[in-house]
Length: 297
Image (cartoon, rainbow, N blue to C red; front, side, top):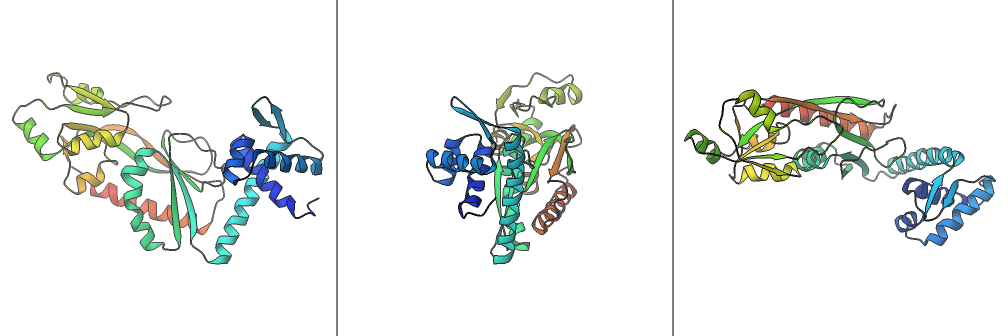
């Protein structure tokens, strides 16, 4: 069936179109024209004597046969890429998908430590809030998710986080003097989870306190930055402020008063025993264990 030189290239083009759900986006990814993508896929369909896509106005959808081939193509192309990395001896690439907050505030600042122990690997960080299907998006090696335990297999619990109040030395000194200090928190973006809020903290730990002025931001980084420059207290995850607390930039306010949050989980495709995945898993767990051991009270 695949006796012509162009067949493997057709599979590559098909996999891109299947993953993207668009001939145009596949063309942009592969730096060819949409016409070339369509031509390659039609040739492949002629070879297989089956339709791989259902073509509609401005949209394409995989058929049942197309879905089966797409899954096999992703696995095969990833296996080829892994073999080329191993045989060539060139630095391998490890692609991590995680939330923007975890990537920016915790993971990326620690990557130099990973490179020191694994200089032959290069980490690509994808930061967004969407749920990644690792079986379909084979270019992603590891996903780190936040929330309740994921239903799919291959999920490993990493850490259960707590939320508290944190501020600069100046902000805490103002509180001790009885001055009013604003409170900053992040708008809860994940609609699948019940929110953990500063109002809940105040109700539980300061039920008779005076009313606090609240400000909301869309990103944890903005909330923590406001606290860092002394504008007020941040209601934040202890994990995401761990570095700032360890360096003395922020301090916990009534550190024993914490609200339970949710967990972080590491996901890989079932049975993934590749050395680069195992090395990152080991490093990540060591770093998280060290961060939890540092505390912050």
